[in-house]
Image 1 (spheres, rainbow, N blue to C red):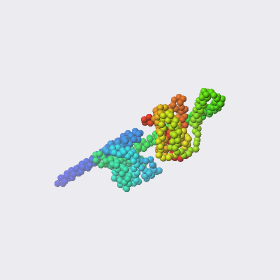
Image 2 (image 1 turned 45 degrees about the vertical axis):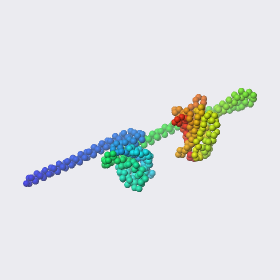
Image 3 (image 1 turned 120 degrees about the vertical axis):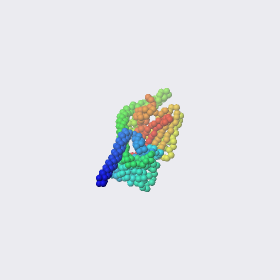
Image 4 (image 1 turned 90 degrees about the vertical axis):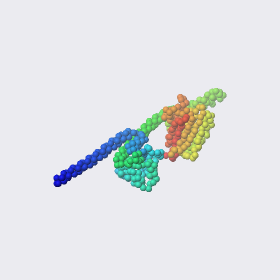
Length: 455
């Protein structure tokens, strides 16, 4: 009997050992499965990061990020908000930066067109996102936002199931929202872990993209500054040469003018000779005007700036020129501006610019045409737009249009100084002047003048 009991005890112990081994084996298999999943997830995240880091275009990058989240999680839609550029003084601080906001930059699979939407999380939600460093369910977001119903409604239309923070250097770079899974399954702990690692990698990708964008912008500004410096040096050299030539020409011109007057006094009855002298006088005066332009180009005449009524100045200028333009079958239309707006400047110099552009437009329309002048306000600038329906300007010539001595009128038909002098006048007024071709036909000159008081 004792022998039977002993055998039974031994068998029970063996069965217990087998069950224990099976449980340990099952637990090891489960751990191995989780490790494999984690390795696969990390490899996937690495591949995604490498791929996204190769995208330099920010729009393409954001699209790629959302498509990645949709594909990996099996959801209908996703959206991404990026943080403003406000930074804490202390990078280790978890305090929400003053004026912190999130701007909707991109959506996928969500029927929504209100891009640029601004979302203002409260301090509690900000702190929760920053300290949890894991996705929050939308119900947790609502609870954290407390009574901020207006802000909750801003992201409610995105149908978010999860809100994932993008954290880098102890600050939130943005958030990603995901809808429910297409399968109807709930998000599990593995999903949370995967999305946490992925979102932080995406924060690095976004930061790199912004740094690249800043570097490109800095390079563009440096290139522009170098070109402006080169142009300024070239213009200064041309100006000094022009002034020297103008000075040398003025002396013999004065002598010629005086002798022409003496010749007119000596010849009383010979009409043919008098007519020829008058023609010579006109050409000499033309040379004087060119010399004057050369001097203006080198050292523009400075006037004390006053408040100028632009609409009034344009009305007077158009009224004076209309009869002359009518003879060439050209109609000038000045569209009235609703309000009286004044800028700081010289009415005479601004009128010179307008007349110059209008005369140029007249010369490119020998068979007649139309000129239209519009005024509008754009933020802190007043814009004067002068359009014609002439042949337009060849695209390759537009970049050189305001350079001194450059003309599109052909040999002997222009000095190439009118537009460069006009450009200098507008720059002296703190504004800008640009030109482009209209979509249908003709060209458009746009003069922008600051509305603020000139320093």
